[in-house]
Length: 546
Image (cartoon, rainbow, N blue to C red; front, side):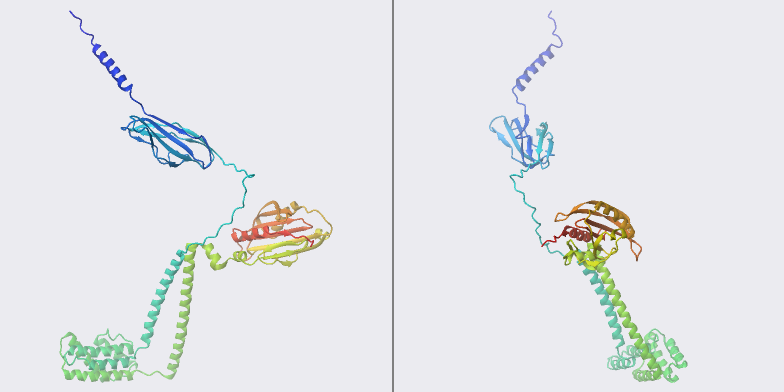
């Protein structure tokens, strides 16, 4: 009997077969390779380095993606070239891509590994280290030239936003002024209109020429007839005649008659009341008055108006004078009101314009260009160059320094041959300049360090506090050495009692005596700072020799 096969013999045979097949198949396949190379590992600032990525054993079926954009940080990619294919007709070929990299700061940099994707599989290059060196300038071979001055370029024309704000505010004020003028004009026209009686007569004539009677529109005729009298009474007697009922209007006339404000006869009032009653019946009870009655009413109305006009008490001469004085006082008051309104509108306009400019340009701009800045005016004005004292000291200042005098301590007077002081401004003003010069009887060395120590005490004696002080060596444009003291202090405003912050610079020299220049300005004043620098940079000692 034949023995059965081992249960695993078939599996072993299959495994061996697959192994041989895989060796046969994959042993002859090509695996892709990704490499990179550079032409240098050290460059100068701004110099470019070639970074080349090569992908080998690529077939037509493979899809390759190279790095894009700035993936080489901290180096900057300047340019990337098209992919170059080596032996494209072969079954397997090589792809090459070149990148230009650079760096503008010196140091050692590491370029991170770059990813290349082949058929969705990622391959990475190695890290690259690059050294970037400074560019050394050989001053023996390369000439140095001074910096060229800046070239002024005209700013393009542009309308500032504050201009439109100003135009808008002016437009609003103009509209307000127009409305006020229109209202005033209407009021003036009302004053110049026809007197009530003459106007009532005109209305009656217009009613006579109307077609109301011819067209038998009696209701409209009598209504307009009574309205003419009501308008007249309202304006002449200043009563609400157009709103009053017939009873109220008649009661008002009787009341005025009793108070001797209206000299009307009872029959005139009674006749006028009848006409008003007929008008009420025509309007509300649809009563139709006849033509003869209406013509009679027309005559009665004209008679009534004439009687009322003559029934009003006449103004006496004394009352006339009082009225004239009242009118003059009223006119004067109105003129005063016009001036007040004009001043208020002008002030509002100025405030609005300033507010708009401050909102867009800032307060400093308004102060410098509209209100006025004294130190800016000094800086931009005509400067003076003058020689002071012996030895002559040349100084360039916004204003000529005026000669003055000052007292020396008794301990110094016996050794002093001559003393001079020149100044401009005062300690409380925006700019204060002082030049002190002392000549001694005998030549002696001046201890400038001791002078520096005395400045603090001198400031305190003048009322200064919160004094900060520093000192350093100083040399004029002519080579004369001295000591500069600078710092800040505060002093009380004698009027407002508030603090005034000041900054100062003091130059001390010992050339043939003692010379001291003191410049004190307001703190945080950029124009004062520019003035100080300009004065200090122009200090020069002149020689006595011709």
